[in-house]
Amino acid sequence: MKQQAFLEKINPVKDKIYRLALRLLISKEAAEDATQEIIFKLWARKDKLKDYTNVEAFAMTTTKNYCLDELKAKKNNNLRIIHQNYENNSRSLQRELEVKDELYWIDRIVNDLPKQQKIVFQLRDIEQLEFDEILEITKMKPTAIRVALSRARKKIRESLTNKHNYGHKRS
View 1: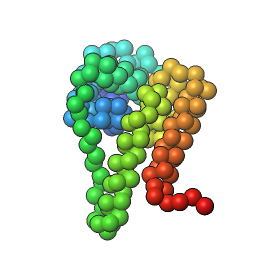
View 2: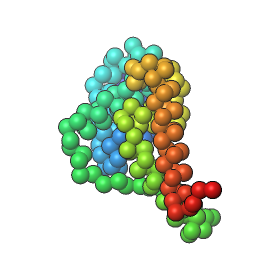
View 3: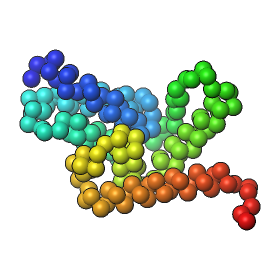
């Protein structure tokens, strides 16, 4: 496979690779490094890529495995949470702070989820992948994927509700 053909296959999934790496590794710099490493790994297997029916699923599986290996190696123990927010000049400063705060809390909640829930939530709700693709990436059973996603969403919803209701008496 020539470089141009490789780039045509990889460029559409490069952003998804980065977002999954960012969700798992938390640090922007670690995610950028992981994305480069994964693209190098895919380049090393460029002749075998044509054998895969879904290159995106293979790339996402490679990303997941690489990031989990990085976390196991404890290279990322002292990484800080870094958040980037899209700038929108039409928002008021108060609204901007509210959105930033909400994203911060969602990020904290998601990062506290168990690994499987975090991965399934990222792939389904952030990356918008179909269940078949998630099956292929995670090698989990369909029921396990649905349960993990349901539990992740429930935990996020409950945590945000508790945060917003803090200090309010229930009737």
